Amino acid sequence: MTLPHFPVADDPGPSFVGLLRAQGLEPRFATGPDGATSPLSFSHGTTVVAVRFADGVVMAGDRRATAGHLISHRHMEKVFPADRYSGVAIAGAAGPAVEMVRLFQLQLEHYEKVEGTTISLEGKANQLSQMVRGHLPAAMQGFAVVPLFAGYDTARREGRLFEYDVTGGRYEESEYATTGSGSLHAGAVVKMGYRPGLAREEVIDLVISALFEAADEDSATGGPDLVRAIYPNVATITADGFVAVGEDEVAERFRGLVDQLTSTRGPLPPGGDPS
Amino acid sequence: MSMPFYVAPEQVMKDRADYARKGIARGRSLAAVVYDDGILICAENPSATLRKTSEIYDRIGFAGVGKYNEFDSLRIAGVRHADLKGYSFSRADVDARSLANQYAQILGQIFTNEMKPMEVEILVAEVGHDPDGDRLFHILYDGTVVDESDFTVLGGEAEAIAQRLGEAWGEGLSLGDALKAACAAIGGPDRTLVADDLEVAVLARSNGRRAFRRIEGGELAELLG
Image (cartoon, rainbow over all chains, first blue to last red; front, side, top):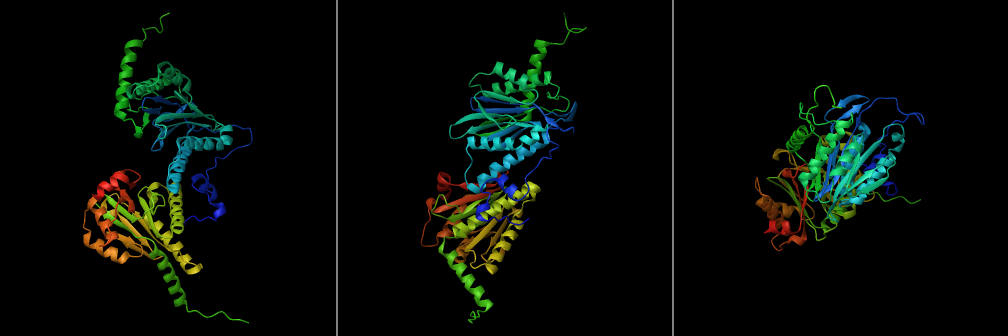
């Protein structure tokens, strides 16, 4: 590989995506005939949630990827750091989604290195919006990617979170956001348990409970896997930056949740539901 | 019909080298020093915004002296090269040696083919996973690459500064001692540099994935003692 050199008028500036385009390396997702939905089977990521709390934002995602009715991966990651003070969580077609995250991370880091300053949180949210919008033709064919973006705004000193739709529409939420196949159930649990200024432990319990209930109702969302010790990914984004919550802590909190649910819901009596 | 004057190729090269050296000597010098946790880059730079040192990739740093716009465009080309390479292959495949060779190619080509050589000297530094992996590549205006081990000095007064630094340098310096040695060597016997005169950055093994970190403000003043 040689050093990239551009005439002034064609210089891509601090944009890594612009640089890829100038080098002919921009990722393209093959598209079929217009209006046709892809008949191929491919992996889908499912449920992710983001909730604001006292110190910033917490993000969490289950670990399951499905292809049709089959489970394709049991320990997929869906919550990623975007840079030091922000994170991105993804749902939708797994391949393009992970590629989008990779490009987004590089876009932020590349800008930071070329310009010598970081992009504002708002600017990062807009960058992701442009990427989702650019992906719309593929989304029309069934390869939709719908991310959540959250970060700690160092200028305002508060956590902020953004949700997107497939057209790149960007919506800032003041309390919580969910996306993916189990988002309806996860969102309902968060909605019932949410109040402003939750403490770190309370909000982690809330998102864990939301993912558990989503997995309980939605076949594409994975619950805690006690056999293989696979638990959802949880991360906090605060003034200390993006910090992944340790597996041990998540496992411990899940055990607490399972104990509590076992005592309240209990096993069904023999012969099925009492009527 | 007029004939162009004949100028011997030796003379052309010598003139260009003199021109580049003069341009570089107008600016201030910088030193890179290997210390116990990585590599320290210390530049004399009264500007707090126009940087001489910066981050190229996870473990690779850049520094330049001479004409600002010229070394800054080289810096950006380096960031682009590294990010493209890391994207196409893997982050582990980006290394300083390959980047230094690319820089040498460009500088060498410009030196021989263009009207004007670049009036710059640049440094590509890479911090290894252990001290044996630390690399310092010093690249001159004509594309000459020098691979140094303990420390290197860029700029007009490089020889005098390198001699002073050589007397102070030892294996396993702490960050503070390395900084004091670099600062005293750049300042020389007649001047004492203070925090405001310096631009300091480290590539530190203990700094996580992105090893590059600037040392500024209170932290810098404290380290200078």
